[in-house]
Image (tube, rainbow, N blue to C red; front, side):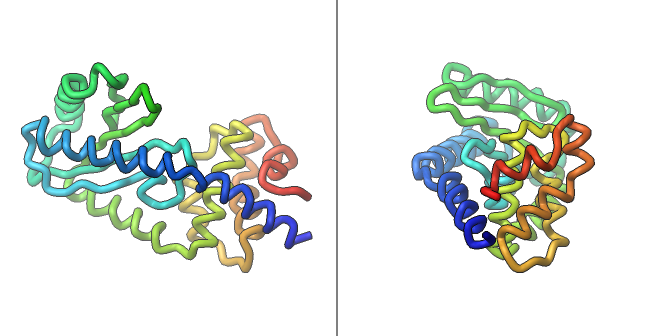
Length: 211
């Protein structure tokens, strides 16, 4: 039965990772946004990096692209958000919906659909975030695959009480032998959150397993 479960998980992973057009789309938007930072903002850019699940190689096909950057000196967060929002609207307002939250400027492209979150971090926070990203990227493939599968299950079950970065953090401490064990434990670790969302493990787990 374990072999069957591993086979099923492999099929889902193949489906999650199998669209080369998605990868090309993200690469295209990555370069477009980086070019915008360097050429359309007038800012001195010290460094840029991919963050979020795409940067950590734990993203699903519809995950946002998170781009972080730092400048030689730190700016006021709210002032930078307003500034970037205006500049992004000038550059992309005809092809994307532009807005911002407390942490990021959102560039949501219409056609093809692709959501990019642009985040300016202080130099200290940039260094910390880069270390977190590298920690996840260095995980064994089986762990990163289990993170994808757990995210897939939570998304399909519409569990909004568990964030993707929390699944990544939890998986750092797991030590198992198979993809099935890692995936099941990544889901069961959040039993309380799943119940809080009005669901159950019996509802979430079958989304990644044929039992």
